[in-house]
Length: 252
Image (tube, rainbow, N blue to C red; front, side, top):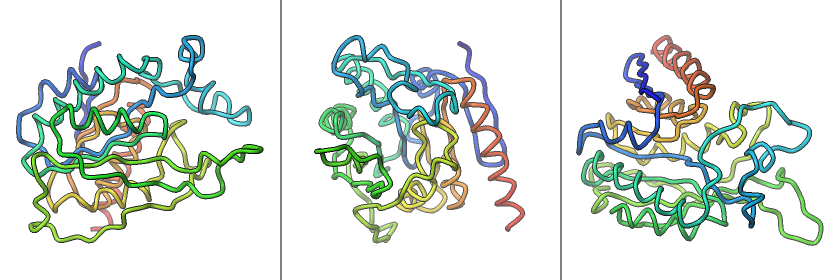
């Protein structure tokens, strides 16, 4: 698949494989990584691993609402190896002191903290995201009510140059009516995460999906680079971020 490029203002989007695109970007040029990669975590057997994402992440009431997405069928070892490759490329392209935030569920949290460090970043902790009691209950079990953001920095934190004081946990429900991707994150969650990025620095999301990270970057007045392999979601993100950027210009 060839790489296609779209831009509007300080927003640049690439339609292509994240590793291929990252390899072409300039070293030490980007200010932050905030991303929600495929988790490849649902299913304990090869049979369930081979299921389409919609079979894992969508209830019957929303079947066929969102397009399928790629990268969800790797086993644990290949997932860790693949993830360390793209994180290593992110490490190369970002500046010293750049933060990285990577979403994970509970199953893949241990390997996520491993591959973040295998890629070179200094691991700084976990931000729990409480999706509230609106998540589906399970009889006799605790709800799977939280996801997590593993985060760190390239080499070291240079927070003295960006003195923000951010919450270490986020509570925000998922509104199904607002989702444009079957695993899309609320923009309010991304709005909080992008506050860790110093003014004027570029945010990159190697797994852009429907573009929630990009909307948050635009809301914060930050340049954004997004990469998406799916044709359907690239078109969704392109339309969404073009509208968000133009709205930001109108609001001044």
